Image (cartoon, rainbow, N blue to C red; front, side, top):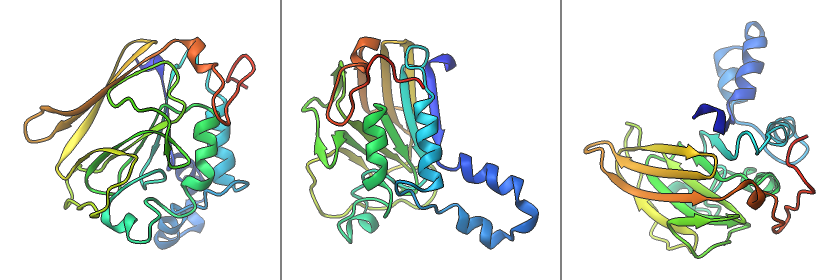
Length: 223
């Protein structure tokens, strides 16, 4: 199953940099360097684009972006208070990369709850489907899965058009790919192991090559 996946964690690049430079940095500086500027043109942005551009979607059809802080969308109270619904300097630039390289799912922690969005681009849902996606998503599904054990965090009393499922509880994710064309996503309660939320994505390689808004590959997404 592992050959069908490509994961990118936003901490990968800072960790490599910190290990290479550890002797010249104290612990406070190390922690500060983990909070990066994600805007277009920065080193972090260039690193992420290089990672995404290097994926051969014929060999690794499912592209999943991982980050600790919510660089996408969250209705969590502390993200909603200023109306940003996510980290500053995150989504505005990175969504261009998620869309260009057709990232299927973006998964975050930091907010201690669970939330799933519709497939979305520039704050607009690109599909009315909620559970059984087929063909091109035309956007990225954003998931906050931060119920790993710390104190839980409530959501703001705001209803957004892009939030499909919310849960203030402890839980974990399970992703199953039985073949290169089908993916099952499940969010399970830690207390019972029962599935609280799930969806499927079914599509072929030709669907990845379909032109969408701000994403129109010629013949291949590899470089």
